[in-house]
Length: 250
Length: 287
Image (cartoon, rainbow over all chains, first blue to last red; front, side, top):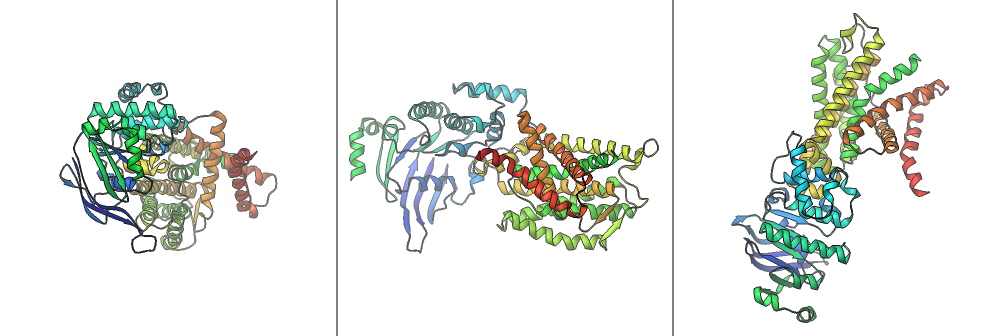
């Protein structure tokens, strides 16, 4: 469970360019919920997500993850629970390392990276199985540097790496923004399956209204740092694209 | 011929320097100028310890530790005090000049009739062939150790840090720790190179490290040009290329001297040559 309590955040506080990014955000996300976050540019979506992942430290307020105060935990300690996917598919993988080596690091996300060589036969088979499920033929490219793969393959790989270990929360900030429509669809279906299989709590930021309707079981619209709409369950199911347009036009 | 043989000896001696530069330059993308100081540091400690009768083995441990410490200082200044990496290196290098002078007590220490790493084969081999044998063994051992290290989980995390710092942070690693460790390791290797070269040439000099970082960089680049010919990507082979680059670089310099270039202009030749090597890939791209 993630609880955000009275979160405030202002960019460039005290200057003429002061912008209120988040104002008095109160939000509780239950385990297993798949929240889609929408809103126009500058509405605070990414800031909200970054405050969960610790790249943004709120000016005031509290963030609790499973009851533990995570407000001031550095990013590399928070990763125990949180896996992230970025807009840029290149940010989730190390291009000069092979597919196998990238997976090795991902498998050790919450563990110590010690002086043993862990990319032996056993691990190789495990990864081959794991990536086989993606249907991208990556199992044949285990020794290839990741930099030689396409953006779509790398994004799918990042997703698959994110769930190697025991992450409970998956944050995705426009993961398909850099992918073509067909690859995007393949990716989103894959994400949906993985999230359901692993019972992950997930937050997805998207500008694709179609994706916002098709995926997730809760939809939140932000405007000027405030939560304007928050619907879930049946209500979300029945939502139409037209209604969403109206929301944006308000 | 003997001239080229001594070039090979120097090339092997400088191979661990080149591996150190490979770690800072290629793995962390940091141009680490500490090198100039830590190389001389290795030479200074070697000259003082060996001429006071300490065994080369013990000296080696001290040299590596001292070099690593110098690198750790640079790493700390860079990561904790947020000083630009280049500047952090220059600061430590400058400070090391005094440290080295204090260690040596004077600006040059010749090693005459002292024990060295090359001694143990004395009874059955000529000087040069025993040097060659020891240097080959030493370099191979370092090659094996470093390539294994870079394949361990720790090594993977190190390599990923230079590649994609954002990723490594989201994978639960503090990139600062890895950088400090990596720069420390690199400078330990560079100091070991000072240890070897001092014994190959038979003296340590306070100025022996000037411009040495360029030598390492040139070796790494030459190695990569070789590797591109063969299209290899494995880290083990990459390191082997770096070692080959170091030897080749020395051979090219020896050749420059034999065709009559004045030794006075050697550093100029090195600089121009490295410039050419660095720009080859870029020139190819633009055409």
